[in-house]
Length: 397
Image (cartoon, rainbow, N blue to C red):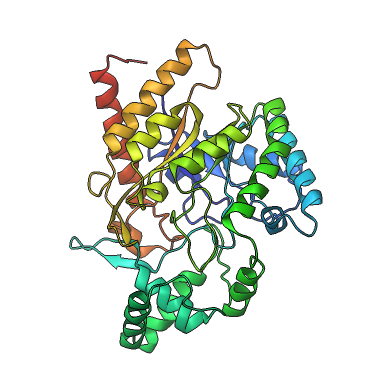
């Protein structure tokens, strides 16, 4: 088997321990130095300390997810030049420590958005979901952004108001907590005031301007990544459409094309997140994977069920609207192609993305989506599909 099977681990504070991860079938770890604030330098000693912990457990630090960008870089304001220099040095330090794949994103303010983290399934499991009217209700009647309603039709505003008025006080509180939740790996959440202020800082930054800022960043850091042999992998927007009036610039095939053409290098690549891209019914995911296979440096695999109104929920690997069989087949063929080209970096890290809460998961507290048994089930099914695909292609190694 070739695709490197990895597992996202949030460091020593993660409720899931490395010895448990070893039993899932994963061999690589995807992690970050969450204790270092955004924009600060990642020192060599801190990187090596984390790497040693992972290696002592018999695993490998395969991917950094994420080396996060300070907001000034995204806005190209304030101390952005200083933070870009820190980013470059952090990449050099990672390369020095033998870590050669970095996932990052360029999403303003929120790294992901959901309106329900406890969506119940008929089998008793729980996953996350997003409904447009719930997000609109939060934006218009809870957060109360200035210029409210500008991104919604009259019918959508009416539906959001009706939905909001139907909510109990507890339901309003849960919706607030869900949307204000910050990064996976952090117990910190925004307050309403903090979120409103962060959004207001993007006033005047259009999608076009944000894309210009991303291109400036890429031109600065990809030469360093190339020098250090680090495969950069930008993560798509989650979800792949504007939320809270914030622009989205990594959501479509055209976005990805523009990004990889900004700096024509194998080290300027993408994270294929089937759940993020797949949440948009306008994305033909199999075609996207075929088109950008040569620039896929990292993969997150999960399934979603969506509609054409902007609503979606996470689903089981073999259910939903994403053809993960086709996706894995394309990845296997791409790896074979890279081997034939003699590339040392031919292997593509794959991790099971958000898992349902199932079985013993209900007895422990996890970061939303990052359960033990739910993700282990996902990884087992993905491994099984890969084995079947490889045998059908007569690829035995």
